[in-house]
Structure formats: structure tokens, C-alpha cells
Image 1 (cartoon, one colour):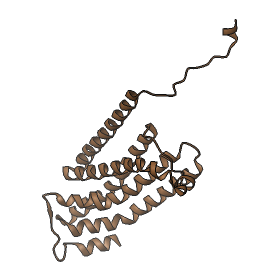
Image 2 (cartoon, helix red, strand yellow; image 1 turned 90 degrees about the horizontal axis):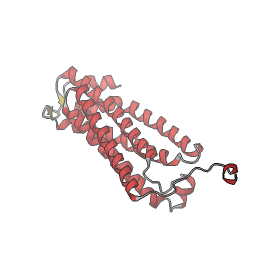
Image 3 (cartoon, one colour; image 1 turned 30 degrees about the vertical axis):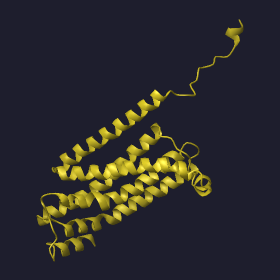
Image 4 (cartoon, helix red, strand yellow; image 1 turned 90 degrees about the vertical axis):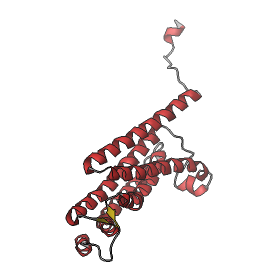
Length: 218
């Protein structure tokens, strides 16, 4: 009678074995690797050139490693009063929420990269040659869009960080770092890597169509 009258209590697990943590790390690595491989295949299929897919993957690996390193560096920043009290930086742990944030960063960086690659492909179709000047002009034509998208996204992330409540800072921290890194990697890493293609040619003194490209960007 006493057992029946007592309220039901569900068993809880407060500690996890090291094997569970190891399996979580393995699943995380597998998810990220398969995501990058799928993105590479998509870019290859869309642009019809493996060089575009390879350049995208290099930028995405850079963004992923940088974001994971920033999460680890948060353990040191949490001891500084400004970062812990104002920016709500804590010694974050790699969990499923952070994995989702990293995958979001990968998708965001790929979107920025595809926009620049689309303009490079469009300009190359007009002038038939891939030069440094053409890549530079293509970046300039899409620069305002890239920066505007990055700034508005970062503004939303900051609002989420300060007003989102508990549990949000780990996501916003990873997204903030990842979007910053993803924005510049699309411009400074992925786009220049396209020039490593065997079809790329050095820019002459006056690149064909450079005036027209600049006029289109204006």
C-alpha cells in the first residue's frame, strides 16, 4: 500500500561513461564528414567542375576547424570577467546542440561561396577566360550582398545571445564565430582557389572585359 501511494519517480542518469562520450565524438565527426562530402558532390554537379567543389570543401574544412577551436578556446575566455559576464561565454562542451550549430555554419558558408562562384561562372561565360582580374571583379560585384547578409545575421545572433535565455549562448557563440569566419573564407579562400584550375590564366595588363565587369558591378 505504501509503494502504491507513493508518487512515481523516473530514474535519471546524471553521469555518462567515457564510451558514450567517445561514441558521440565519432558520430559528430561522421556527420560533419558526410555533410562536407555531400556538399562537394552538389557543387561538382552544379558547376560541372571538380575545382569548384574542391575549393568549397577547403573553405568548409577551414570554417569547421576554426569554429571547433573557438569552442575549445572558450574554456580560457570564461575566466575573463568581460567575456563571462557581458558576452556570456562559458566553458562550452561539444554536444548535439553545438553539432547542429557547426552544421549550420557549414551551410551558411556554402551559400556565400555559391553566390560568388555563380558570378565567376557567369562572367567567365561572357569572356571565355578565367583570370585573376575576372575573379577579383566577381568578388567585388557580390561583396555588398555578402557583407549585408553577414551583418544582418550577426545582429540577429547577438539579440539571441542577450535575450535568448539559458542554453542559447553555446549556439550563438559558435554561430557568431562561424559566420565571421565563413564570410571571409568565401571571399579570401574559396574564390582564389578557383584560380588553381588548369584552365585559369594569369591576368594580363588589361584583362578582357575588365571595364565591362567593373561597370556591371557598379
